[in-house]
Length: 357
Image (cartoon, rainbow, N blue to C red):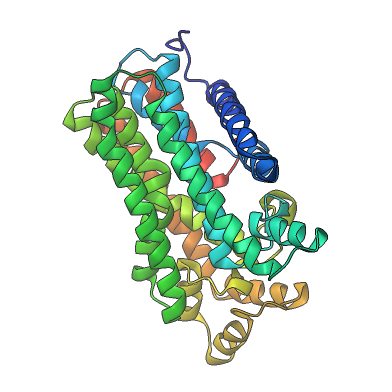
């Protein structure tokens, strides 16, 4: 199969989806052979992976490969698709850590298995059963990612060349997740610290490392790795900052999460740090009363939203997103990237900061 003529994002996404579908079907067949008890696990993995998702990490990896000027193959596409399973692991574990009830408009994995435990009237704690299962399913997704990469069909030399980037991506993701948990425990209100979390928790593993992974698959020269960092790091931070805004201002119909969910979870974001810099003592007290309040209603969420707008915190973060996006665009203009990939990476500047694909 030859993909050399296309950098159409939707077409690549569809091809990635097909590879994921094929892989999960084969793996779920094996799970069901182990025992019928694993049927809910197989079903949950398939549903979680295939129901939705923009496939940003495989897209960036594939375009990172195209940027080297190398000729793509179905094996390369399959290797890039494997990165989506790292993301699945992160989401499942993130929902446990945040005690999130929903994901993409449906019950989060730990809540779904908690409900299954209750419905079947099984022994022990339903909540603990759900959490334990979600941890295991996240671990399984991480194992599947490595398995899909190793079985992608790329040659041994290419695989070995790509592994350092693949490993760094996973290490940095886990480091970022810990930093996020730690910042919440510290109850910090630092823009600098929150930007560091944004870089490691989301930015690097969403954009920079997938680009590096693709460049390694394509045997890219050192210069292209530098260009990808100059593009990927600021854009990755902008991506996370948009996520911070959606966590408070997002439409539940689009985000799949309740309105103001980041407030209920007490998320320590750049947006929160900004508003605390600008808010009055009275406004700060209002925000603090909302943070971590699981019973926060929509009226209270709307009041906190007003503070973010009136203080100018929202506008400042929007301005920072624009600045970071411009920095990323400048890197594309000065880097030596194959024109086909450069055009698609330019489109992604808007897509990842507005979350539309």
